[in-house]
Image (cartoon, rainbow, N blue to C red; front, side):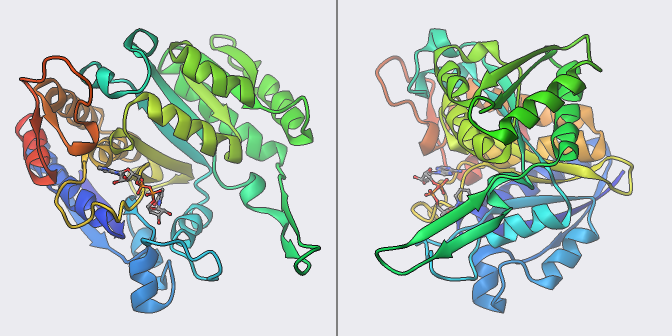
Length: 367
Ligand code: NAD
């Protein structure tokens, strides 16, 4: 198969983890007889510095010509909240342009890393869920949105707005995903206090009726936050609106021990040349300016994001499984970047602390 992949590495360690992942993808292509055409584009602060825009036209064109996007991370070392041109406009613009309405974040607790989480191993063991977050609507996009007034009478407004179609398409994806897994969907809302929550619940029930083979439950988003820490194993798919999904997915990320381990996929309805979903794949971590250029960034989240790409945008299940298994093996063999280094006591004689390059080579050797 010929894979056209647009590389949008972005800022700081985005460049390092995307470069590492390209090496893994090249190795996979050789092993399984595929060809890959990589294109690349500027995004984020790097793009602003060079072109004045976070998502230049040339980048958008490269993305449009591709089957899938591999995105690094965007963000400067400091947040300029007053500037009207900001790095994160790149990712928001891509989501809008391609109508990437569903963000999948698999959260898997690796047995080899169970000690690096702040939670007790007996709570975490066996946790394997997907947080499915609505991505293109809700409070981050609803109008009116803005600020008014001078000091002493300043006001601000954000609006949470959803249509039933936006809710239904996310819930359909949740049930479809559940069918290939443990057949359980929980939908997190605030139906007790928000009209949008009541719409989510109503539509979720209508979609659930079409999937009698999948267990469905409503959960209040605040209670869900609590259950995630108390008993994360109970969840298979958690589907939720944009703002709650943003928060719950970061909380769930901490179950896995480190941001450096977690991949994500953003998918829409559009298909690529091969008839699979066009998608944007990225690690959930940011650009980590504090460690950039030191060669220590953990590339595993981006490598796992590329595995999701193999599965979702190319239907290459074997290749995806091989990449995920290789990551499992490097961890079992004791390879750790600094962010997942064991912190407590215990026997660490098997542990090898490595940088981006050695970790990448270790993954490739185990494909
Ligand atoms: P961050 O995720 O960049 O870093 C948080 C901490 O985790 C840092 O100590 C960092 O060194 C560490 N870390 C993150 N990824 C790592 C990796 N792969 N390997 C090892 N350690 C890793 O979050 P932050 O510091 O809050 O934000 C930095 C910048 O990134 C900001 O400009 C922010 O806006 C941006 N950001 C971008 C995205 C995105 O592009 N999707 C997401 C989050 C934050």
